[in-house]
Image (cartoon, rainbow, N blue to C red; front, side):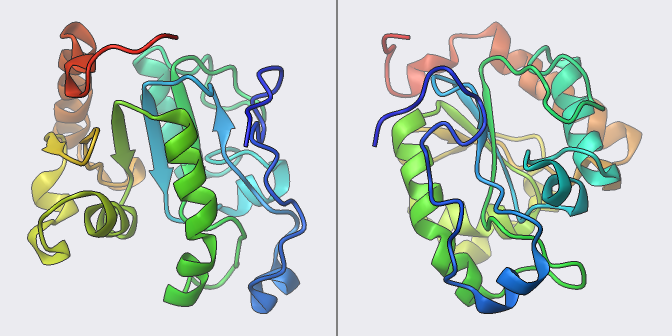
Length: 209
């Protein structure tokens, strides 16, 4: 699977008519695959597309929760603006555990499993240095797959704005930005700024960009 360097929307050409989850086929407007810089060092992982992403086709856009994430990334210089439907991004890739929106509930375990191949392919192709799981569900999924600890050892409230060593990259758990206190937001921005100030590529050595 090769990346289309000319596009930031679904750059790996993943299936845009997947029908593995019949219930979601009935509720989604479109499938929302990853969006961003295919050579990014940072990957932001949400749980599922919100209502805004379902309308735009771009993760974390056009609704309150998504704009809160983009606002955080904008402060760090990864995103040009928090309110655009097709933000300009640099050194960050935006994606979610599942790819279809349901207006009344989060994804089931089966739906998460059905989308595992999409996420695994994006992580392998992008090979990020640092992954930011936004919320407990994304943290649990990454912990189970990419760390040597038990999932029960991780709690997004306790681990927020800290660094956890994963297999080949680092995790920085994030409480959903719209739920953060001012102190939690400041701690996260300070922690990420400190990662940008140091040579975070020491996680697995430098790579060609």
